[in-house]
Amino acid sequence: MAASLIELKNVFKQYGNGTVAIRDMSLTVEKGQFVSFLGPSGCGKSTALRMIAGLASVSAGTITVNGHAPGESNSAADIGFVFQEPTLMPWATVFENVYLPLRLTGISHAEARPRIEEALLQVGLSRFAQSYPRELSGGMKMRASIARAIVTRPRLLLMDEPFAALDEMTRFKLNNDVLRLWQEQGLTIIFVTHSVYESVYMSNRVVVMAARPGRVVADLPIEGSYPRAEDFRATEAYAESCQAASKALRGTLDHVDIDH
Ligand code: ADP
Image 1 (cartoon, rainbow, N blue to C red):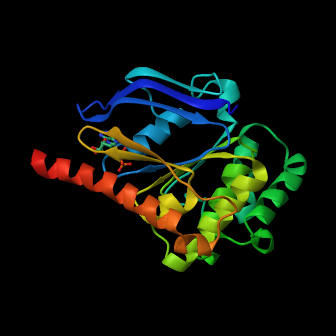
Image 2: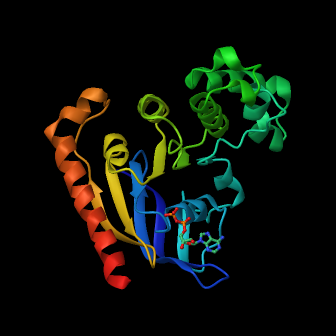
């Protein structure tokens, strides 16, 4: 029996300016799942992710991560967050950037070193530990950002449209690298994207969301065993899942058209 890691129960989020970013979202994520939040811009994907991370408050309803409210002391270190922008400190080397979350928890440089080296190895950046962010390509900056997120050895990795700004070849490569990390480390991942193809390629479950107000409109299981590689894109399971996700997504856009 799979154990649940994340529970959202009737979650609402209203920002100070009155925008209802999330309306009545309930969701259970099992340990080890790879879940995508798929939806058009403004449907609350980022807000949902930030609430799960404890980076944004909940207006009503409850969220638990491993039985604790997000942001409670012993769940915070268990969550890695990868932002849309790599958000690296430009004045610090890759090594020092990846050290940051460990430094913040008081771990010494000497103690952190093997963990930083391991994280850099996992994202293929070992040779660039002493480089500065300005010396790296967009894909490499994102790798550094992923290394920084996994250096605390989280069980849960939350990724907010991490590859939206990358060219397609780099994105495909990073997709495969994240899948490998997910499998090797036994992670649970929630991956925010507005790409049907990316969500289906990566996930075993796609949660489709609609905007105004942000809400879940479909929860689709994705067939297809792992490890997945480029040949998965040529399978019937992939094509059928893309069609189902596109259809659910089109429904969300029709709704916007009717509204306006
Ligand atoms: P997505 O990630 O799907 O693009 P967001 O979660 O960023 O959606 O935003 C959902 C809705 O909440 C949008 O209408 C957005 O304008 C609004 N929103 C997001 N952040 C804030 C904020 N800090 N203050 C007010 N409104 C916000």
